[in-house]
Amino acid sequence: MHIPDGFINGATSAGAAVVAAGGVGAALKAGARSLAERQIPLAGLAAAFIFALQMLNFPVAAGTSGHLLGGALAAVLLGPAMGVTVLTVVVFVQALLFADGGLSALGLNIINMGLITSLVGWLVFRALMAVFPKHRGGATLAAMIAAWASVVVSSIGFVIQYSLGGQGGVDSATVFAAMTGVHALIGIGEGLITGTVVAAVLAVRPDLVFGTARYDITRGNGLGRKATAGFIAAGLLGAISLVVFVAPLASSAPDGLERVAEDSGLVAEDSGFGALFSDYQVGSVEPEWLGTVVSGVVGLIVTFAVGVILVTLGRRRLARRA
Amino acid sequence: MSGSHVHALTVHGHSPLHRLPARVKLVALGLFVVAVVATPRHQLWAFAVYALLVTMVLVVAELPAKFVLKRMGLEVPFVAFALFLPFVGGAPRITAWGLMLSIEGIWAAWNIIAKATLGTAASIVVIATTETPHILRGLGQLRLPPTMVAVAGFMVRYLEVVGDEVRRMRIAMAARGYQPTWLGQAKALAVAGGALFIRSYERGERVHQAMLARGFTGAMPDLIDDHADRSDWAVALSVPLSAWLVAALAVAA
Image (cartoon, rainbow over all chains, first blue to last red; front, side, top):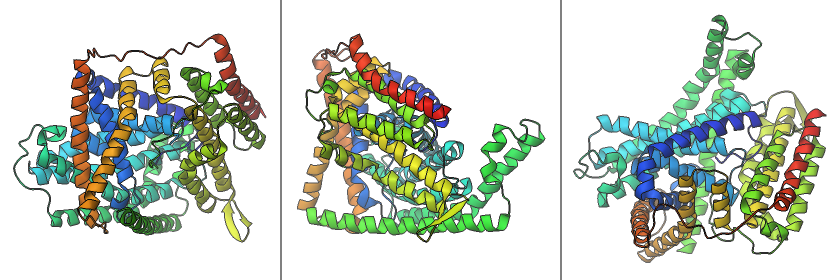
């Protein structure tokens, strides 16, 4: 999901760069005390760890395309401020030392993969831990769901950027259905890795996990087979329901927003705001509704197929190497 | 995306480009990319000029073509995505080779491929001719938050160490009869990931203690001398300024 140069127009990229700089600045400020005192080498090692984990991930991406973001994982293990810092550094280094992701798109990529993943992952994790049983199993499940949500919301970030400054005349609702649907699948992989890594760290060094520092987490066991299967099933269900139910809504909801804006006299009919959301207009509801759903489902099937192929190839490669 | 391309980011050499200070090259690269992105996609000639500029710099930098092409492979996933656009793009459509293609989609695909290729190529030239510590130092001189530069420095320094740790864990897993199968391997790999995190964390603590023991006070000593005089700036900025001129002409046309 590293956006290259030229994918999103200059104005949107520049705006994103300003937002990203503000967000990262706030995170640096929030983490300033601990970072300055002792955690700079630690943050560097954590960034290298996330980078390495992104290399490790391909066979884990069972049935989905393998692209670990790691934002939720970093936030749960190290806290939100460190998570944002670490992920931003990873994205930054990938762009500036590996030419992975465009320089002009740096702001977009930092928002999607640094800010959104860490913050959403952290907020969801904290919210879930407030109600979940405070032991290893509960924390693991919370980390899984947080990671899933972080990936899906991150893809929504891309959809917003695309609808603001993308090209190709692809309907925004179609992009929404395809992106969120596919990422709801990818999120399962992300959730499984995140949850299991958190569980593994909790088993050995529970004191290192920032997200559970306030709880006595030593009781209880890890997550059972049943709960893991339940997570996968729920993720699949989420992917399908996003495509079938949310996508058609998405094509009409901004219309409503636009209507409200026009009715209340906030914007003239031909202003930028109207032009911005013209993509969403539902000329004839029935075909577009169906078209969105069909394209989304096709996207899911294609992703699943590509994932299966990747996993099969990866397995052969690993087996040969071993 | 992030394959095992940790090695060979830079190509050793003594070209004029190698000798330029890092911050000068970074500024030039940033300005060049902005010019490329700002160019309207219909102005094909402008992109030809940009390609010529990048090629000229490549030749001056004495970079082997094979190395550059190999590094450009990173871009392939986006090219694949861009090639979908002509099929899913909006109306109007034309028929070519028996396929219904969206005109808007074709232009969008061209736009992405052209700009992404130019941006990647320009970045690779700068990265390949600049030692990594110099790039980091240049970023610091360009007023990037010192904390971020420091964290990035440690990340780069320990990438290979962590990578080697991964390799050792793989060997250890194979030695214990680890047979990758479908979902079954997910758990083994994630547990390895957990172990990797703990090892990285503890290494981070050890590194910090070692630094304190050697008198670390919060800032890294500056060991690089890269004075930039006016001629350096003039030489480096000539490329992006030409690109800006081309972009201005393209926008006006």
